[in-house]
Amino acid sequence: MKQKIRLMMTTVLVAMSVSSLPVAAADGYKFNLVLSHKNVQHDPDGIWPDTDLTEFGNPPRLPSIYTARLETPAGKWLLSQLDSSCNIQGNCSFVLQLTRPDGKVQTMAEGQTLLGRSATLSLNYKKITTEEISDEIKPFVGSYDVEPMK
Image (tube, rainbow, N blue to C red; front, side, top):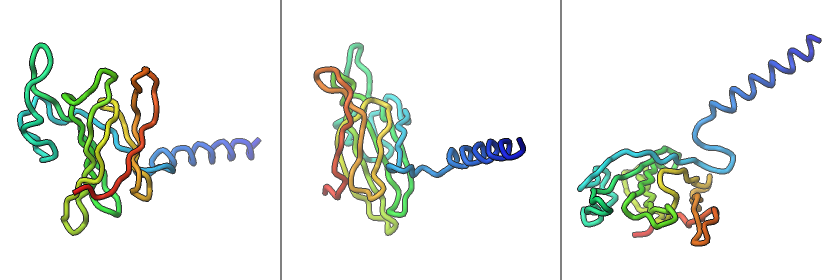
């Protein structure tokens, strides 16, 4: 009986320690997009040009920006998403930017993901996967190469 209790306690402790692991999971680093700038004419992070931040919709309103940030050995990553760029399925444009330890800032990927959802950067920093909806209204995993764009 004591052995069973000890085994259960060990299982609980292992589960608790796994849930407190850092952002890196077995399949990559997870970005969780959250609304960070509502109804803006200027992007405080400098990702989106002011020409992208014009009124849209009915009634007209200024766009909002969703962001997620994380740090890895490669540097500081910023995933930024603009709600005025969404299509009818809810896929919205994103930009993935990396600030390297030496301070150099580079755009590393552009693509689409569902508004305010998550995306995963591979552990080797080569791919970012997203949640998307096809034109046929079917969910699928989007995949984008991660490499310096400019």
